Image (cartoon, rainbow, N blue to C red):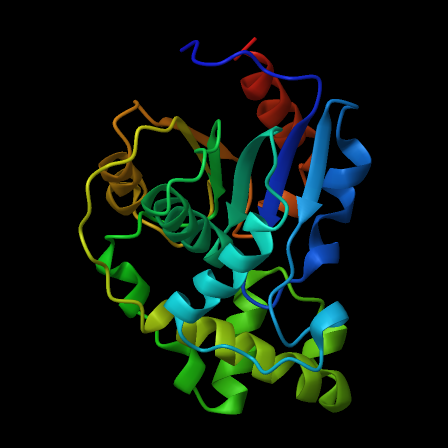
Length: 241
């Protein structure tokens, strides 16, 4: 799968999961090899963008990220990585970049989510759950510290962010499009609450054979294997030499 010569430096734009922020990928930055320039992007309403209103529509969120990423694109080659909600945003963002004639990413890396056309995202409408049920759902995802979920002050900050992000995903209506001509790697956890058929729907999004992988763990297995995931990403990108 040789396509383009890789430059000395490749930008890896990282899109956070629901409730995540730019620092969610700090261990990925720490484990990255010298040639990989990791650039985490920030959704509105958190950390460096706390004054910006939260977005509850996925198309508006993609537009926000599109404005960010196009201001950072240059002659460097780049790839896009997203976990969970970030994976959906990554796919929609890629389509928007191609529609506007931007240079395509070398590769898409997706973790922790089913294909965009999956109907399973509607199985659980988390953003409308009563508070006690919402907290229990967050605990089962096993990625949010329990001290946050059991602290009213912290929950008053993180709760609206999580609900807004879930609403953006849970109200997304998929529109079939032509598959893009970009290689893709999809990694999921062995204990995630997803059917393999839904994960394999990613193949509909690209003309390249998708590389499907699994790692031990639940939805936030990415926190347990930052070194391994960065190694997969790095090795894949180096294969374009």
